[in-house]
Amino acid sequence: MSDGSVEIGEKSSKAPSLEPATISLEEAYLSPEPDVKIPDGGLKACLAILGGWLIQFCTFGNATSFGVYQDYYVQQGTATSSAISWIGSVQIALLFLVGIVSGRLFDKGYFHHVSIVGTLVFCFCLFMLSLADPTKYYQLILSQGIGMGFGGGLLMCLTVSMQAHHWDKHLCLAMGIVQAGSSCGGIVYPILVNQLFYGSTGFAWGVRASGFLSLGLLTIACCIMRTRLPKAKAGVNDQPSMKSILSDKPYMLMILGLSLVSWGIFFPWFYLQSWARIHNLPSELSFYTIAILNASSIPGRIIPSLMADHWGSLTVICPISVISSALIFAMFGTTTTGPVMVFTILYGFFTGAWLALIPVVLSSLAKSNREAGVRIGVGFFIISYPILTGTPINGALLGDNYQWYKTLLFSGILMSVGSVILIGTRQIVAKGKGTQKV
Image (cartoon, rainbow, N blue to C red; front, side, top):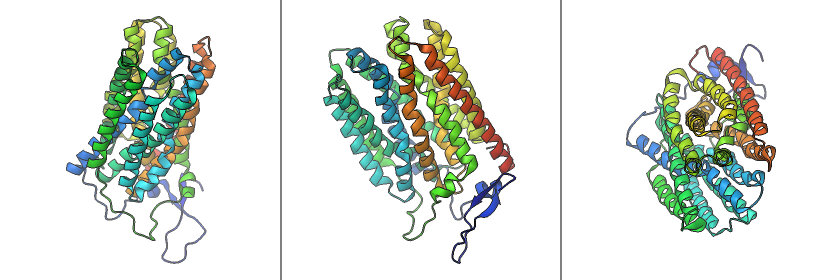
């Protein structure tokens, strides 16, 4: 294989040959799916965005609020910072890891089955968290880490895969709006639980309040979302094999870059509230840092997604990765109120954009709409491992003496290397497709 070509299985009415056919990248990624028209609008498409927004609000919005729980558990003496961060890391990692299952099931036509099961599991475990003793580590990681992560993982991949059924020209914008729901959830949940945890209500009813809110919103989402493409016919397998996906070199190189960035990108989302408290910033500021981080990510998820519709998702995500990496190093100087506020707003904007573009970038190399779900699912599955280990490693490097420079160097260097790989991938794909819009 040479000259930017990729190998795929050769289709034939006869018995399939074991020899792969070699085609160009342009042929591989630009072959249209026959007889499939994407409406790019309408009531069902708008409801798909609304339902996806609500699911992201409850699942990823809750997960990105873990910085509040992290700080609370540390103060309760539950365990070390590193051990506690495993709870949030497991939760976020499972949001991505389970995507390989839910993405496959979605493409096979089981959207409603998966969404109902995911809603029940997520809400059940959230209410179980309210019954947990915040000083008992195993209760927290079982309910919040594993349970909520698994339930949310069944739901999250559906929200972005669904949009490919309804949107084409404005797909990036649609996914950006959907994922802005996680930013809004990341505003509401931290403020809600901070006020209730440290007020007269306490931990148990604070968690229950977020549970009732999530149950209502997820129920609405399950009722209004509808798939558009028909369920695959029995005995017909139009899905790519895992071997063909994993042997797609530009796709795997892209995932490598995304994984390295993912290894460090969540550090401020978990530790910013602790950073503000340790540096003796006003308590009002430290309580609201996670909410501000999420608020600033709302325009970050929408504006760059709109740009990606015009210039291509890979083209847009590369400079965003570079800027996010630079901001990690800039955190060295954010030890007073003003710089912390500026950092929080900028980091929220650019990392929000980066997270919003992940599913768009992963699906950009799909050869048909039916392949989008599994491409996103496989990518989420692989990326989940660095997400799982990134913040616990940061916690271990941080130690009891809060040696921040070790965590900043670890996260910043990995994100910088990942950004370089993404830039290289973008050049390879652009050359293969024969266009700069990739």
